[in-house]
Length: 246
Ligand code: BV8
Image 1 (cartoon, rainbow, N blue to C red):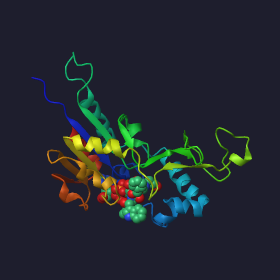
Image 2 (image 1 turned 180 degrees about the vertical axis):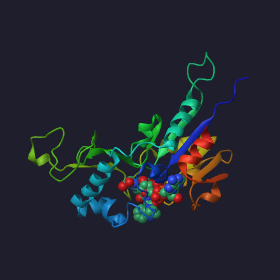
Image 3 (image 1 turned 60 degrees about the vertical axis):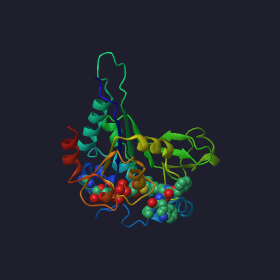
Image 4 (image 1 turned 90 degrees about the vertical axis):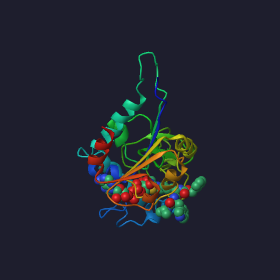
């Protein structure tokens, strides 16, 4: 008899990219050191000093594209797990009845580079920019400044500097909240990896899962949400994620 479909929801935070060389926010080398959140990750901060916010993201965009920064064993294990969950079980199934969604708070592109397909970057993407006037989104790997020509109107000097990072700042609406709520309410398994559980609404997703959902937290340390999980695995993501999923 065919096994019932299984719905998997994964939430990742900065801790899954730490071993790829991308600094976490609250670790000793956290990004926020030397930068107050309100100065570099809020619309007000951008309105006050747009150039210093551009420099903050230019530095991170450059760092993310450094040759030494690549998906690690945890990213790769998640991509393989997604393939296994989503592959048809029998020859006559043209597609799996299972569901899989990887929600990430990270704005790096390491999950996609690892081969994950069903990725929802709820806090935006570092390698994308958005037009302040039209909300149109563009892939972007270079620096941004107040003099950056508009990709659609490069010769118009008045269109310069109208781009912002396509990331969700504090006080701004995260991306895909309805889709996340639906996935959480039907999840059979919820896996939270490398997140401190301090930033909402991401930190509240675990509480949107049903009582029947198996909730697993992988982190170096306890978090404010640890008590809500059925299972807490303490250790490095590159060790614990492959071990749990293989
Ligand atoms: C919203 C993108 C409203 C930018 C980010 C007062 C005023 C205004 C808002 C609020 C307020 N009080 C509360 C709020 C809500 C606010 C919030 O939660 N603030 C916190 C600080 C209290 N949230 C918001 O503003 C959100 N929007 O509420 O809008 C609204 C709602 C509806 C409709 C309209 C409006 C928006 C939040 C998104 C902000 N943007 N990022 C950028 O990246 O520059 S948040 C940013 O910080 C990350 O994306 C991430 O989400 C967060 C950091 O969290 P983590 O990923 O968990 O990383 P962290 O470093 O904290 O932890 C790492 C963990 O990994 C640790 O636990 C560590 O132990 C572990 N770890 C480390 N190494 C490893 C490891 N684990 C395993 N292996 C390892 N090797």
